[in-house]
Length: 194
Ligand SMILES: [Zn+2]
Ligand SMILES: [Zn+2]
Image (cartoon, rainbow, N blue to C red):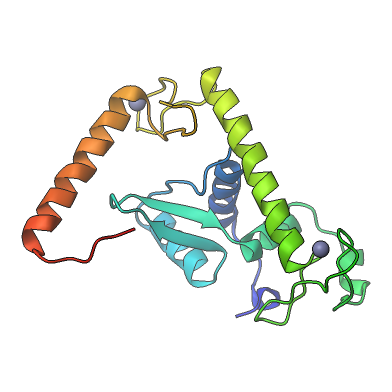
């Protein structure tokens, strides 16, 4: 389903996208969105329509990541720019960054502004910047624990920032270890995960 087919997103759906976007801006892969009833339905709908990507961690935790489609939908919803529709879509051409390789074309037929190599390079650089920012924010105690009702600063190491404070990070790790141990008992022979 292409984005143009999407009807206007509801406020609640947009709120989910904004939360995922905020998490990403802070350097996280996604946001640990949860909810029941309408919110759960919205999350499912956003995932089914490729606006959010539901990612399940090895410890069973679930993150919702903003997809590029979701980001476009969000941008469009937050600042409508009618002149954009009038502009004809640009396809193909040479990457403006290296000036030699052709622009990356997705399976959907859409063209990236950059070539495959430059796109990857930019993503890596962007990732590094985000991680640095996130680590600085965590070190400054600006990020609060995601555990319901807890507002202690998150736990972090040299190159990792947890969603939780030191107390709840330990709690989450224990929970995931317990889960893993139980899984190991149930499925005796399981291929080693990378
Ligand atoms: Zn390039
Ligand atoms: Zn906490």
